[in-house]
Length: 192
Length: 194
Image (cartoon, rainbow over all chains, first blue to last red):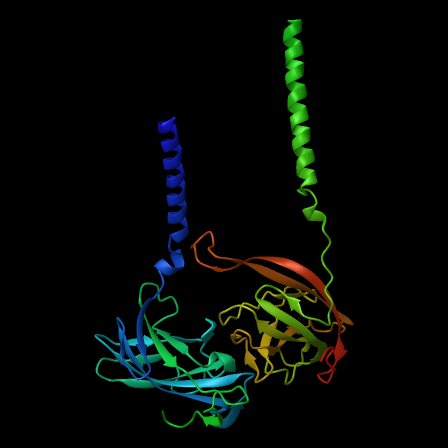
């Protein structure tokens, strides 16, 4: 009788243990996901092939761009965020192509595809010893501007490769819901 | 011999009753009903949820292929334009909207999908930001402009791990319902909802 009870208890423990193992198994997408290299704004984040340093973030209601000599104003339903980042290659020439803005609630905003013609955007080709600056342009909801994280990787499927994760810190909000430092029009034709 | 035939009959009866019971149970649980469900009729003035997208149809019209949001149409061609407000309901920027609306105009022609704000051809739409998009179908030459536009709305389902890669994504496109919009003439057609 005693032995039988002990067996049943052992079986139940084994079932619970196996269930726990199954539940806590990491998701395959996480196992082969990018490897984060974390840092703050102004710090140099060192990845496998590239280094990145976020210099400043600017917010704007509209962007002014030059396309084939004609000026165009890009409007948005939210707010434009323009991050200036300095990139450097480590051991060999490479290029950095993908960036996204992860807001405090986890929504991920990819770089805008509405100004593929402007200068100084990604993808940027970088060579060792020759640091280069680039602008990352995002279109986002105003409530995703504060405490955001900038994710930068060399290519879209950066499985098991490094991804720079730069936390951008809090942003003061004005009474209209936009970040307090929002300018009306940001001229993208200015040199970086 | 006789007894043997009796037991065989009994076996046949039992098997037959079992099969009939299984079919009846499957019928009760709705295994045969799924195919015959009629397509849901969606209201054109309202919001339509398709899993990834929230759609708000605004207007449909036909126009000559000039200045139609910069869509690369053939010169002189007529086009059917559907303007719809789309909101990305997912947590990531996405452009998975090519199959969300299927028109019965000419199923072989793929529409140009344009952001009306600045005529960008099929840009990514960002989470929680409504944008007015135009679906532009080129009408075959010489055909009369249709009086109404029948649309099928396609929805997809989220799977946390797909069967091939074990990665999350949106799969299994299936029709969610149909929708009929009046077709106006010319780009100054009024919106059907504010």
